[in-house]
Image (cartoon, rainbow, N blue to C red; front, side, top):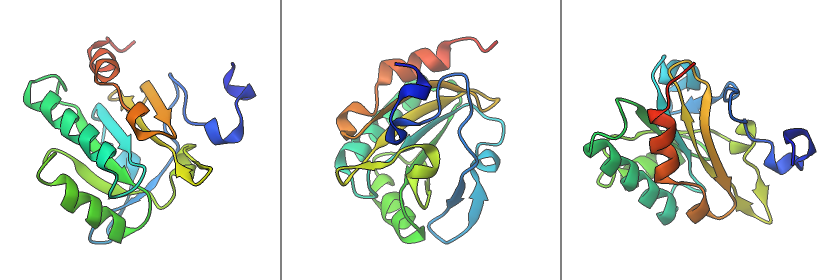
Length: 162
């Protein structure tokens, strides 16, 4: 199915494009643009279903293990909760032990990145960005267990940029 034929709830950034401009908010209320936070680094960006999603936190722990094993090739790891500074604080507190590498922020609304709620389920997803901000891997789902694949992250980080 082509990108244009997908229903609106599935309109997330495609491979070879960039994430839309997103304003992020930290646990202490600081507001920054996603591009400024990534700042020319390759990055693994995981959009959480909620600040307390145990599956999303397990994905964060897996990314931490990948980092500890040297598999992230210096890429940053951003963990993004939907909501406000309060959700960023909750996510940061829950991720601190499992994934100290994670830079935790909130997005306000994941719909700004094309990840909408469907049947009350917030879509979550993992994007790998190269150092130019280009999406090299994208996996999203309404079911958090399907929104992350370590092998896809590894492959995207290992692939040469053109």
